[in-house]
Length: 323
DNA sequence: GGCATAAGCAGAGGTCGCGA
DNA sequence: TCGCGACCTCTGCTTATGCC
Image (cartoon, rainbow, N blue to C red; front, side, top):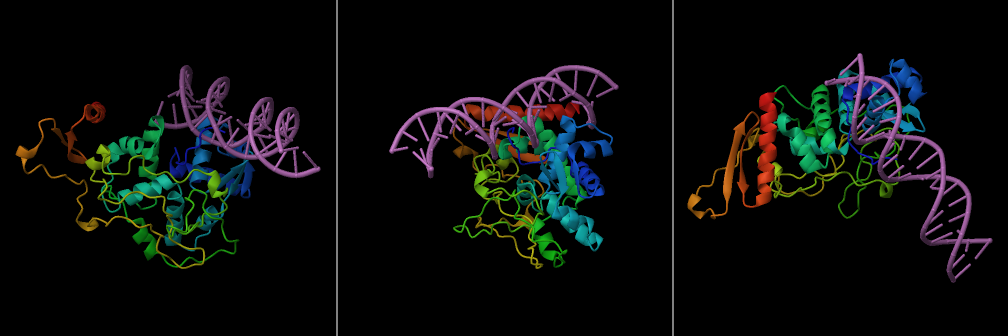
Protein backbone atom coordinates (compact mmCIF):
# COMPACT_ATOMS: atom_id res chain seq x y z
CA UNK A 1 0.00 0.00 0.00
CA UNK A 2 1.11 3.52 -0.54
CA UNK A 3 1.47 6.15 2.07
CA UNK A 4 -2.03 6.65 3.36
CA UNK A 5 -3.42 10.12 3.56
CA UNK A 6 -6.45 10.72 5.68
CA UNK A 7 -7.99 13.57 3.77
CA UNK A 8 -9.98 13.48 0.57
CA UNK A 9 -8.46 14.94 -2.56
CA UNK A 10 -11.66 15.32 -4.52
CA UNK A 11 -14.91 17.09 -3.87
CA UNK A 12 -17.70 15.73 -1.74
CA UNK A 13 -20.03 15.94 -4.73
CA UNK A 14 -17.89 13.62 -6.84
CA UNK A 15 -17.54 11.19 -3.94
CA UNK A 16 -21.30 11.21 -3.46
CA UNK A 17 -21.82 10.52 -7.14
CA UNK A 18 -19.67 7.40 -6.96
CA UNK A 19 -21.43 6.24 -3.80
CA UNK A 20 -24.80 6.66 -5.51
CA UNK A 21 -23.67 4.51 -8.41
CA UNK A 22 -22.57 1.77 -6.03
CA UNK A 23 -25.94 2.06 -4.31
CA UNK A 24 -27.73 1.76 -7.65
CA UNK A 25 -26.05 -1.59 -8.20
CA UNK A 26 -27.47 -2.94 -4.97
CA UNK A 27 -25.04 -1.42 -2.54
CA UNK A 28 -22.11 -3.50 -3.71
CA UNK A 29 -20.08 -3.59 -6.89
CA UNK A 30 -16.57 -3.81 -8.16
CA UNK A 31 -14.42 -0.81 -8.89
CA UNK A 32 -14.60 -1.64 -12.57
CA UNK A 33 -18.40 -1.88 -12.62
CA UNK A 34 -18.66 1.43 -10.84
CA UNK A 35 -16.32 3.09 -13.31
CA UNK A 36 -18.22 1.61 -16.25
CA UNK A 37 -21.53 2.92 -14.91
CA UNK A 38 -20.01 6.36 -14.73
CA UNK A 39 -18.65 5.94 -18.22
CA UNK A 40 -15.13 6.14 -16.94
CA UNK A 41 -12.09 3.98 -16.67
CA UNK A 42 -10.43 2.75 -13.52
CA UNK A 43 -7.75 5.39 -13.64
CA UNK A 44 -5.78 7.15 -11.00
CA UNK A 45 -8.24 10.01 -10.90
CA UNK A 46 -11.16 7.65 -10.54
CA UNK A 47 -9.40 5.88 -7.70
CA UNK A 48 -8.88 9.25 -6.08
CA UNK A 49 -12.63 9.86 -6.13
CA UNK A 50 -13.35 6.41 -4.74
CA UNK A 51 -10.71 7.02 -2.09
CA UNK A 52 -12.47 10.25 -1.18
CA UNK A 53 -15.80 8.47 -0.91
CA UNK A 54 -14.17 6.03 1.49
CA UNK A 55 -12.67 8.85 3.50
CA UNK A 56 -16.04 10.57 3.70
CA UNK A 57 -17.43 7.33 5.10
CA UNK A 58 -19.81 6.85 2.19
CA UNK A 59 -18.18 3.69 0.87
CA UNK A 60 -15.93 0.90 1.96
CA UNK A 61 -13.40 -0.58 -0.40
CA UNK A 62 -11.99 -4.03 -0.01
CA UNK A 63 -10.25 -5.99 -2.70
CA UNK A 64 -11.71 -3.85 -5.45
CA UNK A 65 -15.20 -4.41 -4.03
CA UNK A 66 -17.04 -1.24 -3.14
CA UNK A 67 -19.91 -1.22 -0.67
CA UNK A 68 -22.07 1.55 0.64
CA UNK A 69 -21.93 2.27 4.34
CA UNK A 70 -24.65 2.69 6.92
CA UNK A 71 -23.96 6.41 6.88
CA UNK A 72 -24.62 6.52 3.16
CA UNK A 73 -27.88 4.63 3.65
CA UNK A 74 -28.88 7.02 6.41
CA UNK A 75 -28.43 9.93 4.04
CA UNK A 76 -30.23 8.13 1.27
CA UNK A 77 -33.16 7.23 3.48
CA UNK A 78 -33.35 10.36 5.55
CA UNK A 79 -36.84 11.26 6.71
CA UNK A 80 -36.59 14.82 5.54
CA UNK A 81 -34.23 17.33 3.96
CA UNK A 82 -33.07 18.58 7.33
CA UNK A 83 -32.03 15.14 8.44
CA UNK A 84 -30.41 14.48 5.10
CA UNK A 85 -28.34 17.63 5.44
CA UNK A 86 -27.36 16.62 8.94
CA UNK A 87 -26.04 13.27 7.74
CA UNK A 88 -24.31 14.86 4.76
CA UNK A 89 -22.58 17.10 7.25
CA UNK A 90 -21.58 14.10 9.30
CA UNK A 91 -20.09 12.46 6.24
CA UNK A 92 -18.30 15.62 5.20
CA UNK A 93 -16.74 15.89 8.64
CA UNK A 94 -15.59 12.29 8.70
CA UNK A 95 -12.05 13.16 7.59
CA UNK A 96 -10.39 14.47 10.74
CA UNK A 97 -8.70 17.21 8.79
CA UNK A 98 -12.02 18.71 7.77
CA UNK A 99 -13.28 18.59 11.34
CA UNK A 100 -10.16 20.34 12.53
CA UNK A 101 -10.55 23.01 9.88
CA UNK A 102 -14.16 23.60 10.90
CA UNK A 103 -13.18 23.86 14.53
CA UNK A 104 -10.28 26.11 13.78
CA UNK A 105 -12.38 28.57 11.80
CA UNK A 106 -15.53 28.13 13.84
CA UNK A 107 -17.69 31.18 13.25
CA UNK A 108 -14.86 32.92 11.49
CA UNK A 109 -14.08 33.67 7.90
CA UNK A 110 -12.27 30.92 6.08
CA UNK A 111 -9.16 32.36 4.44
CA UNK A 112 -9.98 30.69 1.14
CA UNK A 113 -7.09 32.35 -0.67
CA UNK A 114 -4.55 31.15 1.86
CA UNK A 115 -6.14 27.85 2.79
CA UNK A 116 -3.74 25.74 0.77
CA UNK A 117 -0.76 27.39 2.47
CA UNK A 118 -2.30 26.66 5.86
CA UNK A 119 -2.97 23.06 4.91
CA UNK A 120 0.66 22.57 3.97
CA UNK A 121 2.12 24.32 6.97
CA UNK A 122 -0.25 23.35 9.72
CA UNK A 123 -1.88 20.13 8.65
CA UNK A 124 0.93 18.29 6.89
CA UNK A 125 -0.98 18.21 3.65
CA UNK A 126 1.27 17.40 0.72
CA UNK A 127 2.04 20.45 -1.34
CA UNK A 128 0.82 18.80 -4.51
CA UNK A 129 -2.52 18.03 -2.86
CA UNK A 130 -3.04 21.26 -0.96
CA UNK A 131 -4.92 23.15 -3.66
CA UNK A 132 -7.21 20.20 -4.38
CA UNK A 133 -7.88 19.59 -0.71
CA UNK A 134 -8.58 23.28 -0.11
CA UNK A 135 -11.03 23.25 -3.00
CA UNK A 136 -12.64 20.06 -1.79
CA UNK A 137 -13.08 21.53 1.65
CA UNK A 138 -14.50 24.86 0.51
CA UNK A 139 -16.90 23.32 -1.99
CA UNK A 140 -17.99 20.55 0.32
CA UNK A 141 -18.47 22.85 3.29
CA UNK A 142 -20.62 25.10 1.16
CA UNK A 143 -22.64 22.16 -0.09
CA UNK A 144 -23.44 20.89 3.39
CA UNK A 145 -24.19 24.33 4.73
CA UNK A 146 -21.09 24.77 6.85
CA UNK A 147 -19.81 27.69 4.83
CA UNK A 148 -21.97 30.70 4.02
CA UNK A 149 -21.71 33.22 1.22
CA UNK A 150 -19.36 35.33 3.34
CA UNK A 151 -17.05 32.33 3.72
CA UNK A 152 -17.85 32.17 7.42
CA UNK A 153 -17.56 28.68 8.85
CA UNK A 154 -20.45 27.45 10.95
CA UNK A 155 -20.13 26.07 14.45
CA UNK A 156 -20.31 22.32 13.92
CA UNK A 157 -20.98 21.62 17.57
CA UNK A 158 -23.77 24.15 17.76
CA UNK A 159 -25.34 22.89 14.54
CA UNK A 160 -25.20 19.33 15.76
CA UNK A 161 -26.65 20.27 19.12
CA UNK A 162 -29.58 21.87 17.35
CA UNK A 163 -30.19 18.70 15.38
CA UNK A 164 -33.25 16.66 16.18
CA UNK A 165 -32.79 13.29 17.81
CA UNK A 166 -31.65 10.68 15.38
CA UNK A 167 -34.28 8.32 14.22
CA UNK A 168 -32.45 5.11 13.74
CA UNK A 169 -32.84 2.92 10.76
CA UNK A 170 -33.23 -0.72 11.50
CA UNK A 171 -29.60 -1.42 10.97
CA UNK A 172 -26.89 -2.75 13.17
CA UNK A 173 -25.11 -0.37 15.42
CA UNK A 174 -22.50 1.14 13.22
CA UNK A 175 -18.92 0.49 13.91
CA UNK A 176 -16.83 3.15 15.45
CA UNK A 177 -15.46 5.61 13.02
CA UNK A 178 -12.13 4.48 11.75
CA UNK A 179 -10.99 7.99 11.16
CA UNK A 180 -11.47 9.08 14.69
CA UNK A 181 -8.54 9.04 16.94
CA UNK A 182 -8.66 6.35 19.54
CA UNK A 183 -9.63 7.81 22.79
CA UNK A 184 -7.93 7.30 26.02
CA UNK A 185 -9.57 7.05 29.39
CA UNK A 186 -7.17 9.63 30.64
CA UNK A 187 -8.64 12.32 28.44
CA UNK A 188 -12.17 11.26 28.93
CA UNK A 189 -12.81 11.13 25.22
CA UNK A 190 -15.23 8.56 24.08
CA UNK A 191 -14.08 6.16 21.48
CA UNK A 192 -16.15 5.87 18.38
CA UNK A 193 -18.51 8.53 19.49
CA UNK A 194 -19.45 9.00 15.92
CA UNK A 195 -21.34 6.43 14.01
CA UNK A 196 -20.09 6.32 10.53
CA UNK A 197 -21.56 3.30 9.05
CA UNK A 198 -19.59 0.22 8.27
CA UNK A 199 -16.45 2.02 7.50
CA UNK A 200 -13.64 -0.39 8.02
CA UNK A 201 -12.58 -0.16 11.56
CA UNK A 202 -9.14 -1.48 12.09
CA UNK A 203 -7.76 -1.61 15.55
CA UNK A 204 -6.93 1.90 16.61
CA UNK A 205 -3.36 0.95 17.20
CA UNK A 206 -3.00 0.06 13.54
CA UNK A 207 -4.01 3.40 12.31
CA UNK A 208 -2.13 6.58 12.76
CA UNK A 209 -3.78 8.91 15.17
CA UNK A 210 -5.91 11.56 13.64
CA UNK A 211 -3.78 14.25 12.23
CA UNK A 212 -2.68 16.86 14.61
CA UNK A 213 -1.55 20.16 13.29
CA UNK A 214 2.10 20.18 12.57
CA UNK A 215 2.72 23.14 14.76
CA UNK A 216 -0.26 23.75 16.94
CA UNK A 217 1.41 26.27 19.13
CA UNK A 218 1.52 29.95 18.75
CA UNK A 219 4.95 29.86 17.19
CA UNK A 220 3.59 29.01 13.80
CA UNK A 221 3.66 32.17 11.83
CA UNK A 222 0.83 31.18 9.53
CA UNK A 223 -1.35 30.37 12.50
CA UNK A 224 -0.43 33.70 13.95
CA UNK A 225 -1.37 35.38 10.71
CA UNK A 226 -4.92 34.30 11.19
CA UNK A 227 -4.94 34.74 14.90
CA UNK A 228 -4.95 31.02 15.46
CA UNK A 229 -2.02 30.65 17.70
CA UNK A 230 -1.87 29.10 21.12
CA UNK A 231 -4.37 31.47 22.59
CA UNK A 232 -7.04 30.19 20.29
CA UNK A 233 -8.41 26.75 20.18
CA UNK A 234 -6.17 24.10 18.81
CA UNK A 235 -7.58 21.64 16.35
CA UNK A 236 -7.92 18.35 18.01
CA UNK A 237 -8.57 14.86 16.94
CA UNK A 238 -11.76 15.04 18.86
CA UNK A 239 -14.76 13.30 17.44
CA UNK A 240 -16.95 15.26 15.23
CA UNK A 241 -20.39 14.18 14.80
CA UNK A 242 -22.11 14.74 18.00
CA UNK A 243 -25.06 12.49 17.45
CA UNK A 244 -24.93 9.27 19.30
CA UNK A 245 -26.23 6.06 17.86
CA UNK A 246 -28.68 5.82 20.67
CA UNK A 247 -30.66 8.63 19.21
CA UNK A 248 -29.98 11.54 21.47
CA UNK A 249 -27.95 14.45 20.33
CA UNK A 250 -24.95 14.81 22.51
CA UNK A 251 -22.30 17.35 22.98
CA UNK A 252 -19.08 16.38 21.39
CA UNK A 253 -16.63 14.82 23.76
CA UNK A 254 -14.38 17.79 23.96
CA UNK A 255 -10.98 17.47 25.35
CA UNK A 256 -9.95 20.20 27.71
CA UNK A 257 -8.95 23.18 25.71
CA UNK A 258 -7.56 26.55 26.48
CA UNK A 259 -10.14 29.16 27.26
CA UNK A 260 -12.03 29.80 24.07
CA UNK A 261 -11.77 33.26 22.64
CA UNK A 262 -14.80 35.47 22.39
CA UNK A 263 -15.94 33.91 19.19
CA UNK A 264 -18.75 36.25 18.45
CA UNK A 265 -16.46 39.20 18.85
CA UNK A 266 -13.68 37.72 16.78
CA UNK A 267 -13.21 39.55 13.51
CA UNK A 268 -13.35 37.53 10.33
CA UNK A 269 -9.64 37.94 9.93
CA UNK A 270 -8.12 38.79 13.24
CA UNK A 271 -5.72 41.62 13.21
CA UNK A 272 -2.85 41.57 15.55
CA UNK A 273 -2.41 44.95 17.10
CA UNK A 274 0.57 46.93 16.08
CA UNK A 275 3.20 47.31 18.73
CA UNK A 276 2.30 50.17 20.95
CA UNK A 277 5.80 50.77 22.17
CA UNK A 278 8.14 50.77 19.18
CA UNK A 279 10.95 51.94 21.35
CA UNK A 280 11.03 48.56 23.05
CA UNK A 281 11.43 46.62 19.80
CA UNK A 282 14.86 44.98 19.65
CA UNK A 283 17.23 46.13 16.97
CA UNK A 284 17.12 42.67 15.39
CA UNK A 285 13.36 42.56 15.04
CA UNK A 286 11.62 43.58 11.85
CA UNK A 287 7.97 43.66 11.06
CA UNK A 288 6.22 43.17 7.75
CA UNK A 289 2.59 44.05 7.52
CA UNK A 290 0.44 42.37 4.91
CA UNK A 291 -3.00 43.59 4.04
CA UNK A 292 -5.29 42.57 1.25
CA UNK A 293 -8.28 40.38 0.48
CA UNK A 294 -8.79 38.11 3.41
CA UNK A 295 -5.68 39.19 5.21
CA UNK A 296 -4.59 42.05 7.41
CA UNK A 297 -1.80 41.16 9.70
CA UNK A 298 1.84 41.50 10.39
CA UNK A 299 4.79 39.20 10.55
CA UNK A 300 7.54 39.70 13.01
CA UNK A 301 10.93 38.76 11.66
CA UNK A 302 13.49 37.87 14.26
CA UNK A 303 15.28 35.09 12.44
CA UNK A 304 16.55 34.51 8.95
CA UNK A 305 14.14 31.61 8.55
CA UNK A 306 11.22 33.99 8.98
CA UNK A 307 12.15 35.50 5.64
CA UNK A 308 11.25 32.24 3.93
CA UNK A 309 7.74 32.61 5.22
CA UNK A 310 7.53 36.15 3.97
CA UNK A 311 8.82 35.02 0.60
CA UNK A 312 6.17 32.32 0.53
CA UNK A 313 3.43 34.84 1.12
CA UNK A 314 4.82 37.23 -1.44
CA UNK A 315 4.88 34.40 -3.93
CA UNK A 316 1.29 33.61 -3.07
CA UNK A 317 0.31 37.22 -3.59
CA UNK A 318 2.19 37.26 -6.88
CA UNK A 319 0.17 34.26 -8.06
CA UNK A 320 -3.04 35.97 -7.00
CA UNK A 321 -2.11 39.10 -8.88
CA UNK A 322 -1.37 37.09 -11.99
CA UNK A 323 -4.65 35.38 -11.25
C1' DG B 1 6.82 -28.09 18.94
C1' DG B 2 6.26 -23.23 19.87
C1' DC B 3 7.52 -18.72 19.27
C1' DA B 4 9.90 -14.72 17.19
C1' DT B 5 11.77 -12.61 13.38
C1' DA B 6 12.93 -11.96 8.48
C1' DA B 7 12.00 -12.31 3.68
C1' DG B 8 8.99 -12.44 -0.22
C1' DC B 9 4.89 -11.26 -2.45
C1' DA B 10 0.37 -9.21 -3.77
C1' DG B 11 -2.33 -5.52 -4.09
C1' DA B 12 -4.44 -0.91 -2.78
C1' DG B 13 -4.07 3.43 -3.77
C1' DG B 14 -1.13 7.66 -4.32
C1' DT B 15 2.11 10.02 -7.82
C1' DC B 16 3.38 11.82 -12.06
C1' DG B 17 3.67 12.99 -16.86
C1' DC B 18 1.01 13.48 -20.68
C1' DG B 19 -2.85 14.62 -23.69
C1' DA B 20 -7.55 16.34 -24.70
C1' DT C 1 -8.74 21.71 -15.65
C1' DC C 2 -9.62 17.10 -15.89
C1' DG C 3 -8.96 12.30 -17.15
C1' DC C 4 -5.86 8.56 -18.38
C1' DG C 5 -2.67 5.04 -17.37
C1' DA C 6 1.92 3.53 -16.15
C1' DC C 7 4.59 3.61 -12.34
C1' DC C 8 5.82 3.70 -7.47
C1' DT C 9 5.36 2.93 -2.57
C1' DC C 10 4.53 0.42 1.36
C1' DT C 11 1.17 -2.36 4.37
C1' DG C 12 -0.41 -6.73 5.53
C1' DC C 13 -0.35 -11.46 4.73
C1' DT C 14 2.12 -15.79 4.03
C1' DT C 15 6.03 -18.56 4.26
C1' DA C 16 10.73 -19.65 5.67
C1' DT C 17 14.23 -19.71 9.01
C1' DG C 18 16.41 -19.62 13.49
C1' DC C 19 16.36 -20.03 18.41
C1' DC C 20 14.73 -21.92 22.78
